[in-house]
Length: 110
Length: 110
DNA sequence: TTATTTGTTTTAAATTTTAAAATAAATGAT
DNA sequence: ATCATTTATTTTAAAATTTAAAACAAATAA
Image 1: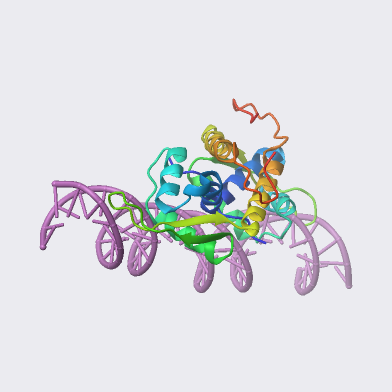
Image 2: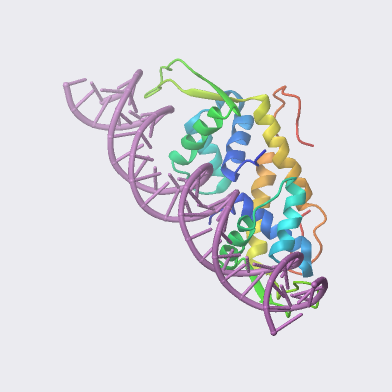
């Protein structure tokens, strides 16, 4: 089983966090804020499609809304497999970030 | 400023952890244990070289040892820039993994 | 009907990852 | 001495991922 890539992790976590508002442009906005830089549209939509194809996400298309430009949105939701994959990276992160020795370079993680 | 990729993060953390034993094959062994699967040699050496070129790592070549096959090793050490980059991904991980709502899929990170 | 807004898709280049083969330099065995 | 084995790094090419930009689609506003 392969670990999620960085972007895949960020996108799955964004879907988790955004709950009922997890669709492409909103995910992009959310992650842009967290990263402190503008993500391109493709940087989100391309991996979203891949994650769905691999069964980490499910999706459904909404009805259009009556706002200006309010097209149908494709909403995403984590699958059990998606949660599992997140659990795996989390476990690796736990292992790698724990018990780092002091090497006198000014910072040790909390 | 771009985030470290997953593999870059893992390698920098391995160098940190291994301290005086941070060279290619040892890093590979260490990460293979953590990931629970065999990493190819290139999977470690290729990013190591890139991380050095970008200034996240410094290196020095040891003298050969008197063990069977004990060639000179290239040891790596984190630079201040490397620690900084780790600090950045750590900060993003903090933000993304904190306050995830319960979505009833059987697991919420500690 | 034309412009603007919100949203998704496509595409192609750049970058990263991976596996495999090649190379290098050491000791052990015959 | 020569050959085999071991430890170690380099190179290479294919596959996969990331990214930016352009294209496309469908809605409301003017």
